[in-house]
Length: 256
Image (tube, rainbow, N blue to C red; front, top):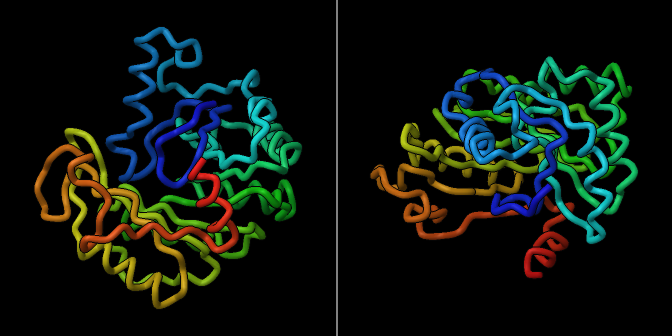
């Protein structure tokens, strides 16, 4: 459980690590690369590398953090992977419910299984301090958005990262936040500016906060360079809006 440089959260919490490839966005998984590096460094939690592993000993970690914090849950895994039993997810939810001072972001590519979990196992009972999100990296998986619309969560968000194609026309009804970012690494696939602007336009038209995280390895000008050099400016501006429910609170905390 660590503080993180991920621009749209504050801390990561990994009661599960490891995953398997699921869709196009997984091809150059940053978490897989990091897990193998940590395994090589002798980190106990990554003794299995990127093989999916449950960590019951990590379930109570958020209880040790006193200050209200934003947690990205399973930044090194997918909580709704088929091999994560629902009874283990129940234990994750129990910790979440026992720490109402924190906010938890659950992001998955397996939106259908997340929908089954909250629909059948918990009768749509999403904890009040949970944000639900799904990754929409290209036009082939836009249908994942439909799995979020009817969930009773204070924030339902899309992570269009790495953005790999134009997403076409989006129906953002029921969606509270959209994050967009390009891919990083030596094998990164380019993200075109027009794809980003198309999403931004639709967010503005439909009243959804838009958060542009980064260009990644390919810059706004289409040149491949270090991601830090490419930065996060879009048409010369920082475009990082927050969901209305937490915008002011999170901005104040980020100044600490």
